[in-house]
Amino acid sequence: MTAEPGVFIRAECLKCGLCCMETEMVLLPEDISVIVELGYQVQDFAVWSEGYWRLKNVDGHCYFYDPAEGTCKIYRYRPLGCRIYPIIYVEGVGPAVDDVCPLSDTITSEEWRTGLKLLKKYLRLLKRHYRMSKR
Image: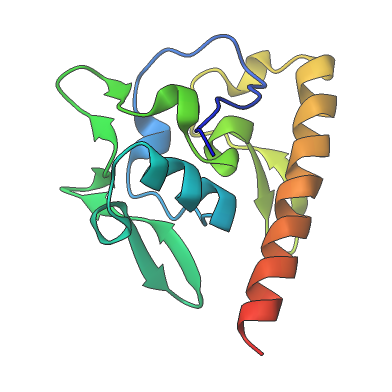
């Protein structure tokens, strides 16, 4: 299996890195597989926390964020949760646009619809995988 880039909901990004700071992004098994195929070791980029595999933070930012360049080292292959951003799921509220992103007020209705579809898929896959792994 070769790592393939997935879908993107936003063509525009300021590369400010705010979404990469103190990330708690939960990883799908598929995300982990793709990143491992790129040559990374799971223990380098992920941590097991609160019952989920999550992106690891190093010096306050995602393992893959390069602060000197302001870019993600695996941008084309980043996890599904990162691809959906700035659309997020807020516990007790539901889908939302993260106002941490400086471009949060520029989400188009088409990006919102696409993001919601991907968010539903992401949540369904998380539930299926992590519910099964707890058995």
